[in-house]
Image (cartoon, rainbow, N blue to C red; front, side, top):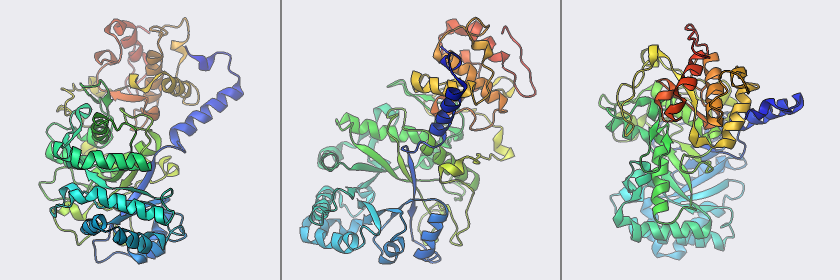
Length: 501
């Protein structure tokens, strides 16, 4: 079982560890982070300075809400990939008149490409919630824009789509029950998804766990919303375990597409974020929570692959937004989603690149840092407090044998976990399963690192539990004696627990 220790040369060992670390911390062909550059403000820096800021932070994708010439010119030659927007108010003209679509593409796209690396056109934005009732014009407008791209021979380089809000879903919980609003299926979604399939494009989705948490903070754990360690929530419909609300929301959209037989359509998350400030009734809006959400999201996207339902579907995610925008209407939160102040100073410190992740830590405040869930996670049942505040790191059965084996090799190798007790003939060798051995190794590493946030991850192969592992469904209860006591064998900082092993 522990092939890492059998007939391996030191050179192979070193190479294996290097490749695993590389795959965990880089995933070169994995997810990508971009940012929304909104400009509903009267105090923002010039577009030229904004491009310099983006480059200084290693941000290589940006989404804008129009086709402002000063912005597109500033992005010229920058190497930054750009998604531009055709505003909702132009949908009618674009849908009704091919000549309008051709003219729009010529002036706002072809005139700048390829020096400005426009990679996508968002036709409208959250059209279904637009009070001007432009929904029926959406797909015809998308088709006309695509035909204009064909005319200018840009259709293979530039995708056409339209961002939808989660309000387009009839059901979003549990994720497996995700479905689109019935009145939109035949009129909009089937024609639009057909178009996306035919053109090789993807569905654009705007997802905000903050809204769900704000409205349901009594049943949704803040740790679950902020990508922090938690026992997770099992979807009763498909048996998958979710460790964050973002994944659950995205998979609800995937499930809705699957219900209509569009499993092959990819997805890009065109907006997501968390406000650093809000009104008194906007529960959860704070600098600390915004930093945790966006920082942990960046780590999850750049290192975590896909979602539980689509584990190989690496996501491109655009954070909202680049700046706090002081001219926005609505509650205080609307003006405080920015990653930067207009002065170009960071609102809080988070990384945007794989390199930046190396020194990233989710810094809880002393007030909230020691809290554990005392209320149910939505749909997850009650979570009991940990034994004397202790937590354990266990393998996720959903990760698959290949991913578990790679993570096990790393933990027992370069990770420095004490894996001697799970060698053949040793006291904790049984139960002899990849999941049990990986759990022991992961927990050894986790405890050795002082249970620091992020040390129980292993590329999405592990998660933290707050009860002895036998209390969870990760292993049959027949494993209780050996497995439970072997976990207690692992030394915990400042509290040595000894057991049968």
